[in-house]
Image (spheres, rainbow, N blue to C red):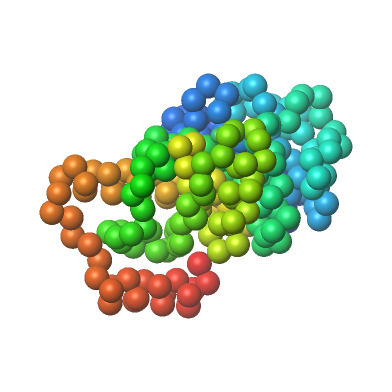
Length: 214
Ligand SMILES: [Zn+2]
């Protein structure tokens, strides 16, 4: 795990990129990261994540009790805690509402039903489809808990996306990959005559992914 000061800087950098790329609007989205075994840093509610200051981040324990910070923690903290409690290998979480990915999350289409890009295998893997939950209630964390054990990329029905990683930047890059795959998949649906990767091509990609430990 990185030093706390580096984690704070990475959270601010990712907030900036989420905002610049329109993966969030207004005060949407949230970012968190483990600082040690029993505590996390998480973004506050009511603030645009593109303009965060290091001192605005809040430190909490894994029950959501505030350890330091003056602002109010994001109302979505429950889904972050649900991930950390269930996945010891996850050190950072990014939640955003990227338009193309969120559009898929608002349909019954499955983004990974047909593979059209190697990145879908290499970067995303199995996508978890979380059923709809009212934002800020435990309905969201309950639906996340059901999918989080074998996915690092989750689509939250009629809401947005959640990506997990070993550090803040790798969780963020999964969000970029997810949005790019969603956008390109959407374009192919508009154009038609999509060339899908066949079973043999998908098997080859899966084998490489396993060998390289991606
Ligand atoms: Zn949200």
